[in-house]
Length: 166
Ligand code: FES
Image 1 (spheres, rainbow, N blue to C red):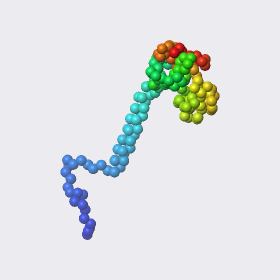
Image 2: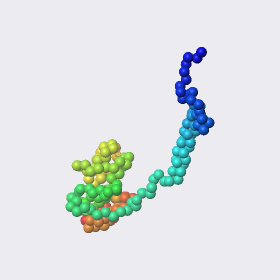
Image 3: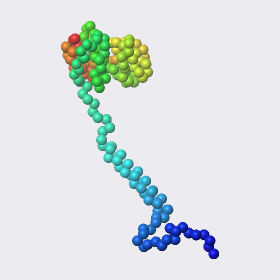
Image 4: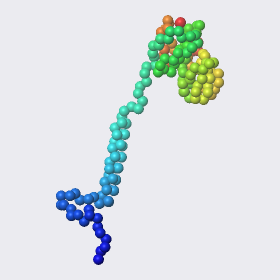
């Protein structure tokens, strides 16, 4: 005689309208198909994204800039979004690149000129190299104009000492 009792749910009579319970092996199969479908979907999304450019065209390298009122002599002004600093001195206004000639970090003003935060190169107020590892000073860039408004071309290097009028 069997002394074990079966749970009520197992012994309850099933209606023929009740759905068949899925066996465990079917659940594993459904999970595997869902995982494969998900992977395929992500792969398709990646493929659809490929034709889009990851890098957009950079803005024009030529731009107009107006120096702020009250900019002191020797104090650099870096226009927002540009890798250029404009400096006014007794002889005029010149434009220096802020891109370090070592590995391309952006230099920042320091008490005795400019310093590179990446590897410690230092530059004089006119961009000349004071301390490596940068191999050379900061490039001087083309600048035209006068009266506080200037046209700067980030893409054109000019000889050291080239200035626009005040
Ligand atoms: Fe400026 Fe290395 S990038 S010192």
